[in-house]
Length: 328
Image (cartoon, rainbow, N blue to C red):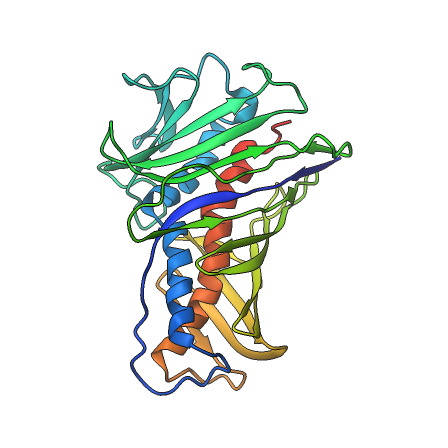
């Protein structure tokens, strides 16, 4: 039995700029400084501390049965918090939690990618399910993710997406769609929209693929996330920039220090131009001859070409995959 879904996200991202100082670009790209700024804009939206925290808590929440299959009256209206002594999540009651959501407390993370000790709260998320316990049918299961900063009661919304089953796919048992929310754009911010169908074969890896847009251009994103017999992910994306075709395709990616690390090959207009390596400490790139890039902006753009698809995979698709897996 296959499991299939789709995703679309609306995300507020702050516009960043790149440093264009240094030698002339050796990459065959036009307006590379502008491209660097656009890539910074997108990645800034996907790497907020709050989204990272939600991603880090996804597996502990699944292990504690706080996923779509178990969201009933015993958990809705309550709050998920991190208990640092046993290193697990627990369920508590906090005043003001809406009765139809599971509230998730978000924290600063340490070097291991888990909540730091002592705990420092940085925001919270609402998970609002529609399932058999809340009036939904088996072919209409859905869940809304809304991620907030502090302070309460007037926080900013960082991201808002819905995930739901695709009823027309009779061959699958898991289907979902995340669609753009209606949050206002903050001053200087931009919306990023994702539409990413995914399939989850029983016992296999999750496969994500979709066409999205944000920060001035459309892009195709695809990824795989580890099922029960795997521990690696992959992330790939492709887009056109001022007439040039750009593609970055990763090899196996592993979690390290709260982010996905590994290598990706970058191809521009059909020609391989660089291998990008991402570690917990940072990102580097070498050309086809194994030499580094002297131009700072070249290095920056090449690093972002792996950062963006890896961060979409890690901080958006991973919590969706884990908490909505087996959801239909």
